[in-house]
Image (cartoon, one colour):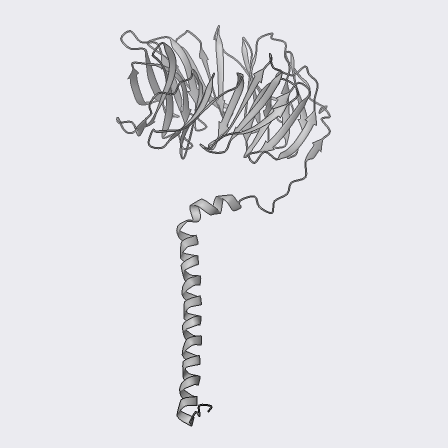
Length: 387
């Protein structure tokens, strides 16, 4: 016999169904909130992987046509040095320093007193020093900020974009001395070093720098680094040694990058070695900006030519080429690389952004905002270069 339901039973059944629906909705809402919370807590892991999704760049083929008018800039001196910053080309010969604008017009010419001059440029500022001598000069835009004589001979010097100068000299009692001047020529920091300094990288506001040192360990040359603030005696961090002959050090917000002759290493902001990559070939050059690094590696015996791109301390992205690589520069988040007859620009996902065919007579270049300045042994050319 079928079970009979009275009115109260029917009401109770309906209430149960309503309660189950409410509980189900609450469970769905709770689960949704849990997923949102988990996504938020682990955003540092998944969010970077989404960057670049949906961005598709079409490779730009620049025509490589040489600019006319004031170009080429002819160089009469057989031995010269070039720098670029703040829309200015700095050209140092054995007797003069010249300033050119991006149209090739000469804006300034000044004679310098140095026999073995060396040029270093950052932004709108330049430092010229006597290699093995005791004098240097810092210039910014159209004025000489200051000139100084050192008690010891100058090994090398670096300038910041704000006109600060870091000068490394010989020492009677130590491997070398480091002296840092502000934009007014006043000493703001000094340090006696037991190891030889190989390079210096100012931070963005010129309040400190990263310094790399060369040493020996188990019969091999090694490199270490420290970060210093000019208003403090203690180092911000000190790294352990890296198994390479350090050529360049570049500081950034997450620590520093050491580009060596055999390997490239990332150091985190606690001084720990975050990554180490040994080249498969000879290092032809490297550059780093904002933690993004490009190193060009040539192996002539195997005819293998590679650019290694590091966007962080992760393993590098390797891009192969058909001919030897000559020069590389990192600017505006892109790696510009010169081979024998071409300049290519890559982003750090490995995407080819632009190309331009060039003559094989150029040995290096400088990237401007909209241009590439091509450097030959006796002149400088300019091409338009869009990315």
